[in-house]
Image (cartoon, rainbow, N blue to C red; front, top):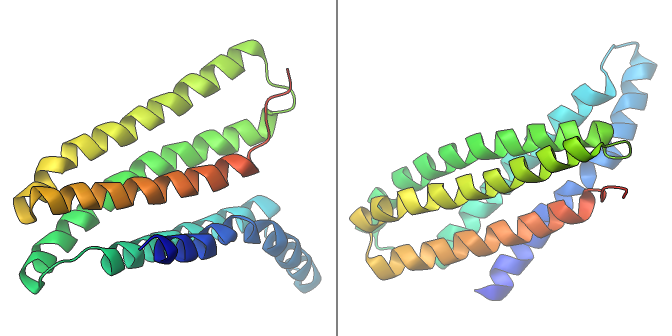
Length: 174
């Protein structure tokens, strides 16, 4: 299970690096073709594709590691899809915060630094609250042990993605 999760997420998190390379290539290509696509539009499109790929990989990792019967799977996946839909909303706010930070990380004021870290930690709390909200939802459709297993897998995946993301975010200049 560990090797399966690590392999799939290594592949998915490699996508965090791809947008930088793709941006340069697509921006050059659009300039050569005379289209007016901005670098920000290319970045946004790449990020959306990356997020879709990661969600797909994440679901595959869960499917490969959750021992669900056919009956359980029929009930589990709709709950999982609702959970992911709510997770996307939190991550949309996180992405907006990262984009805001990227514009000013090298000139951030003390007030901006305070605001950034507080909002980032509030999003961590939002993710925790979302998991707590969904524990009983998953326990309605699978056993408590399987629900615990799901949240262990989900948390491991999230931590790996967070680590990859954090390694790409420049530190505030003191």
